[in-house]
Amino acid sequence: MKAVKPAQSVRTNRDWLHGLLMSAPAVAGLIAFVGIPFCYAVVLSFYNVRLGSPLEPTFFGVEQYRRLFTDPDLSGPFLRALLNNLTFAVVVVPLQTCLALGLAILLNRKLKAIGLFRSLFFMPVVFPMALVAVIWRLILARSDQGMLNSALDAVSFGNWGAFDWLGDGLTAMASIIVLSVWQGVGFQMVILLAGLQQIPTELYEAAQLDRASRWQQFRHVTLPGIRGTLVFVALLTSVLSFRVFDQVYVLVKGGGLDEDAARTVMYQAVTTAFDQNNIGQASAITVVFFLIVVVLTLIQRRVVRPDDS
Amino acid sequence: MSTSTSAGLSRGPLRRFLDYAVLSVLAFVFALPVIYLLLGSLKPSDEVLNGLSGFLPTHLSFDNYSAVLDSLNSDSTGYFWQFMGVSLLLAFVVVTGGLFINSMAAYGLSRLKWRGREAVFTLVLLLMLVPFESVAVPLFYMFNDQRNTLLIQALPFVANAFSIYQFQTFFRSIPPSIEEAARLDGAGPWRTFFAIIVPMSKPVFASVAILTFLTQWGSFLWPVLMVSDPSVRPLPLEMSVFQGQQPPDWGQILAFGVLLVLPVLIVFAFFQRWFVQGVASAAVKG
Image (cartoon, rainbow over all chains, first blue to last red; front, side, top):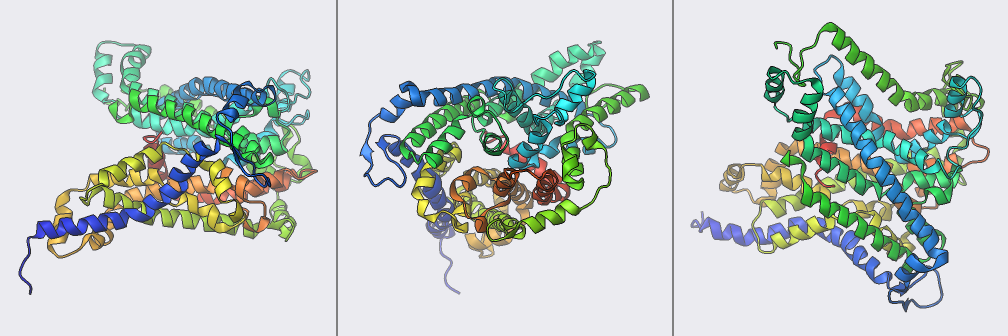
């Protein structure tokens, strides 16, 4: 047996090495696949660089950004994509949050088989978006035999006929919104349900003693109790709204979705990089996308965290 | 007040009946697309797109399923079991590799004291702000000569800042006395971590694993950019290719869809509690 060394100093010395070694693989991975590519995107956005082009990349200054916002050929689709994302967010955030809140309140009861109902509403969350897009492609099919069309035909006593929900510029974005809400609402519901369950029962009992109506209980107990969670969910949904890509891509490529009416910022970035090989331009789109997301995320963190409620 | 529920309202049988009625109607509407998917996958293709009668279950069979396996059975189309195998392999690598390195990093960053660890942890938190979408284009450019490999499909998703954050949140709540006891027994940080911390952290491992699996299984953007060769194509990308066939064989497309979602539904059915916890904790990220 060696003499006992002062344990503290040995430990601290070794901890330095062990801590670094333990963190190294993951931190290296993050730097290689997130940190460096992210900085690289910023650099690439200042260059005229194309994939497979024999020409050397040339410095472009802010030309890519100028084109994105002012060049008539490029800014058209890009600004349309920004507008589409904005429309999506403006409709989906309140719609999905309210729907999720309604479901969460309905499901926050001690009923038999309530767990079954909760699972059912949560189930679409586990569906890959590519599959969700395909299912809804059938439901919204343009023929008079599409499910929605034939249902409308039945309730209008045969006065409906065929309507091309995905292909019509007016309803293309609405279709994407409906299928996205169907897939995603269970996610928000689960978070809000967790929020509701944190409201102390005594508050409701006190409200009942004061003869508060159900609406008054909702206004003065439920809403203040989950205010934090609610704001959080709304902001989270708005961030997710700007990341929409899968369903748009699947339905444009194979489902007859009106491309211009449904293109999103990420769709623009991918088609610019992949179909046009224009890496510089796509990187500029990526940077704009990131700025939007980061502003929304920072607002979210500043305003509220779910534990606050 | 004896029957007060979590909503704090006393309920008679009528109320309870109304609750069930409202829930059932909503659940039915909500489940319609899933019912449609299941029924359609069991019906002859020409009857799938058949208006509301598409819901009438006439002569159901598993023919579409065997037809999917038959039609995806050559080098040019790819093989169904190959798509499934690629997806399972990628999910396995990303989930197990991720659990290993991210939990280890979280431990090193939260329970061992060393200079610079705050800076490294801040870096991790900053990188958590960067969604994959905003690095997809530069990654596509950087790794263009690696397209159509399995490695590049998995590698960017193994290290995950959010997983580190989830692990770190859990480890932080473990009382220091447990580690001190282990250290007095002569265990170094590695043994303390693998023999003591890991076994007592099953809940966080379960939710991180399930959330990672769910995300990876549906992963679409990266394969769109990186994969054209059917032999390394994962299922969701093939879903998109398969539904684009002309003319579309709807019965087969829906059968393919069921096979795509089946593994994740099985996981969901068995580990539902962890699923919901993982998702709820994912909310913290934003």
